[in-house]
Length: 273
Image (cartoon, rainbow, N blue to C red; front, side):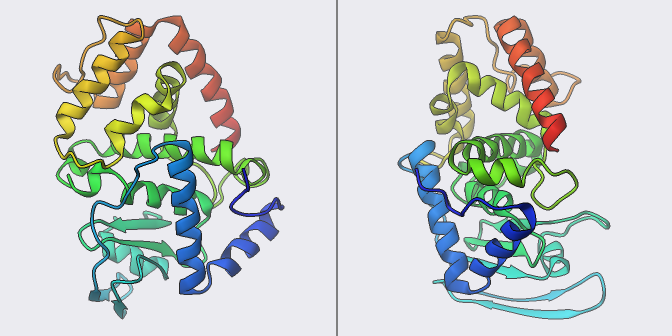
């Protein structure tokens, strides 16, 4: 499979990426290529559930700057200064925002000079997900969604963009670093056992907004893999966070298979993030 970008060192990679994404047309081409890889590797029917709309907005940044934005419907992705992207999503003070998706208008924003292919793929996945329609789930299950998104991002980068993954993403404290490590490891361990094709329908938009039913169908698929007592953690609330309960349920029902994979992933992530 042809890589989205050539093999390179971290410094030259960032230069190559930023040069290619410096124009609106170049950035759109990068997004189109990322979507192609998503379709090839994860979900052939992947599509944007919300159309890209004309977006006119004035941002008032935390630094007191006024920044007007005008994007036509034909432009789905754009770069803007990080302070502007932070204001668009209402980020907390001190929070670093490398990219953001605005599903209600079908737009992706990348923080200028502070994003990497990891960011672009991560935001592309968000834009193709059921959660772009069911935005009410983002607050309730934020870490579930972000961990699953980063799991799928890691899978794509490690299988489609291996040169980039090896030369860039293993550097710590960079804009290329993988995020949501704890949650991503749980999802990647599950995927290693049941397959990414089993996880894909619970993530990608395919005409169904009844996500809770999709998750229950996902649980039924896990039961068919040899874990007949696997519980739907969304229906069995507890004091622990949802991802912690999912981690525990996997340990109980999947046993040492899950534990071994999770430990191996932990060792890999210790080198990457």
